[in-house]
Image (cartoon, rainbow, N blue to C red; front, side, top):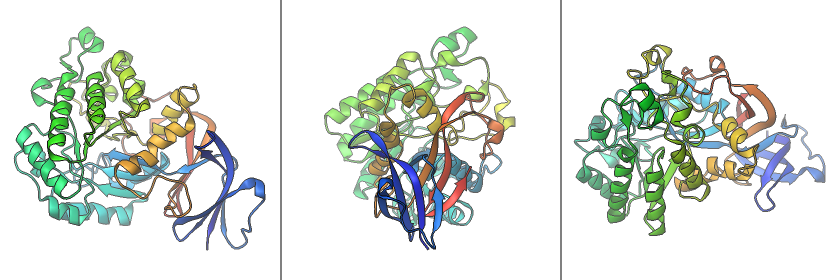
Length: 428
């Protein structure tokens, strides 16, 4: 039995407008897309989803998330994390390896994939660690991790401090045509710091995390990527200096791609209202100048994709205060409404630009078949109500993590339904 999505607004990149379409899904793929103006298709005997004029898009792709399983299931697990992802319109997500045990063995990669099949409701792509236990001392078995299903190598959560170790990792990954995804941070510059080196830190007597702690590793790794030919992907870019270095690298044809998070596009350290650890994340909220730099970097293609860095924590963990609480905020369920409200509704971006950075661009960067709304593509689809406005209520999140700085914000553009492999997995 096929499924028809009727009366959906589909973005047409050619003319920069949305057009009313009908979409037929069969055997988990998009079978055809027809003009609504041509009349109602024959839907007899088929399942019908009436989009009723809502936006219909390729499912969102998030290449940087934390599902916390195995080891930290009190913060999140694969079941709750994928439900939260679906509620945010994400159909494919890539999870980071800073679990317990660290995802540094084929067994742990297979565990995540098996759990995703049995308890998850969206596509889950696991990253594997660059070094054993993410300690930066010994490379993992890249070949066995790739064979088990890992889609890239990263020690996200900690930067690889030793340049020779990173070069060896890049050379090995390049020989296997696998990407290295880097959390860029020089540990010697950040010990004991919780927020950026800026106005908020100065006013509250806090040690600050300087911009160069990120940019030093970005610059180092760009040179190593040039030397090894690896696909080098920079995590959660937050500083003007990093943007400048990545832009320069791309001009020289170095194989570097990069991502940015909604919070770094919208908030600066000057927005932090007080010592509330729900505003503590890594990288930290930077200065207004940095915010403008990452916006411009995303707009001109220096930064390729948008990710959430979804990082759920328990209320107890976050209650330890700005200095002692762990870094990270949840991101799945607010990402699209935040960016749509702040950039598309205000006329700064087109709807097509935002959709591209959240769908086809991440799929292109990582060589995925998803991220496009066309015949023959996987039927991973998101339906969004662009006109519905509501308040961000963390208590209603499907994620176990309620840690967000955006509670109480009124936003437009809430996902209404999510389809994965042709199956309706979540509906408002």
